[in-house]
Length: 368
Ligand code: 13P
Ligand code: 13P
Ligand code: MG
Ligand code: MG
Image 1 (tube, rainbow, N blue to C red):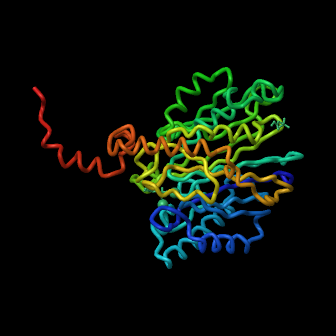
Image 2: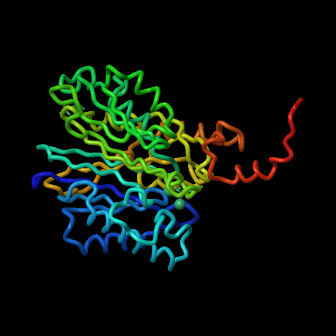
Image 3: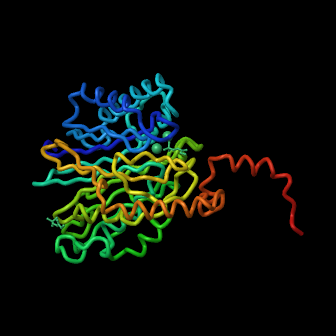
């Protein structure tokens, strides 16, 4: 529909400085120059969180649009050339193919996009994480949209009281399922409590029949290792959350990150660590390549224009969460290569471990 606006957040790691720490400013400039050339977009904002280049785009072409995906792909390809010239680390890391084939999904970059009818006032939050995986959003999304101890509006706002519909994807079987909350909360938790396999893909307001209505949140769910068949970095996820007026307030959405929960990722994508909420300035994971970070930009969308963003975690009220995350990081690091700091074996499938086990296969003998 002509009145509708689509928000596409598309990210990729196309090379970083130093090692896997940050995106070189020349890549950000190159991406912005490339996006400036097109008339496909209403607006755009280019930023970086850790070593991931983030394209925040608004346009009128709907989700899964080939031209928009091509534009993002070309922008990453162009930034990859700059990364190669600068000999940045892992240049082109997330572009799994040399050629683009119509939809960026499954080709390496992460994507969260939603088509909406812009409300009279449309505050949206774009969350971007580094050194973790899509399942990292499960717990905070649950808190935002289903936990009344986090989101007061679920109890006291009549327009939220009916709850939400969660769409969960099984990344192993390639299946999806919807849960209605609050009535199916316990069923939902059975699955989303296993975030390496089951990830929340989207959340909807309930319509008058109690079924999925307007989109409220959308997350990226790509897992590169499942696509590439080997370890190629973690799938540092993004998500878009609409807020206010029958949806969680901005502060309720942010509150879900006040507790730095444990997520898979960190060093070599193979360790559990706390997800630390940081400003964009502090999105430079260094200790043991982490700990994992989440940053958030808030936009007050206006006729498709993004206008000035607000750096949402650039606030002293998140200092305690950061301090807690550092304490958890210190505690976990002492455990070195032992689970549960190191991820369980099943999650280490695409690392050196299967090779070691294969090499030693013959040395294993029956115990009795
Ligand atoms: P709305 O119902 O307008 O979103 O107000 C809620 C609020 O802002 C509480 O902080
Ligand atoms: P990225 O997924 O952010 O590139 O990190 C990879 C890694 O191995 C960090 O130690
Ligand atoms: Mg990297
Ligand atoms: Mg990264």
